[in-house]
Image (cartoon, rainbow, N blue to C red; front, side):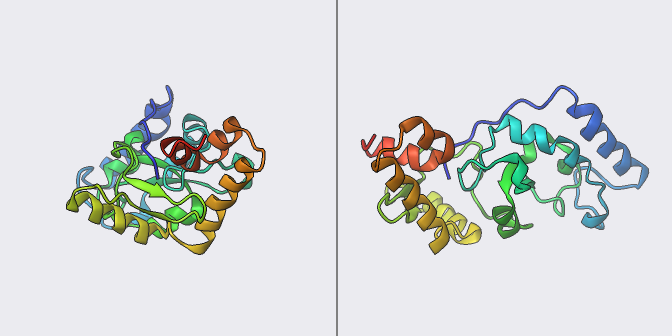
Length: 198
């Protein structure tokens, strides 16, 4: 995971998502700043902005920091503050993170992970030969614990994720180009640059 900049909401987001969501909440007596009685009953108006979210973040998963094609169907809108915790945030662009399906499922309704938006640079570091991820040992205790919790919750250190990152770096070393590495695997590129390996 690397720092992500919050992108501007699309011009039609207010009309297509926020207004519809807020209207539904009001008509059903659901307080926008409170947990909804039944989160699964919230109409998924956010899906109207799925493609715009993918475009805004250039197809890069906020949690895995990898590019994925829209046509794979692997894109999902993660609500950083879970729908079960705050009904109104279900319809707020600032609460959306572009996510691969697996990362979104792993996060679920939990709120104990670090937010890629506003993340401190170099919070997570990689061993590029193995793809292993870990919390930067220079972090203060609170941030280090948060980073370790994030790795565990999202399963960022799984053998499959490690292999993916190691392969991406190996392909670059074997004659790949920097731009492709940056576009397809921004975290690996970020770490290779930090480690002066580009």
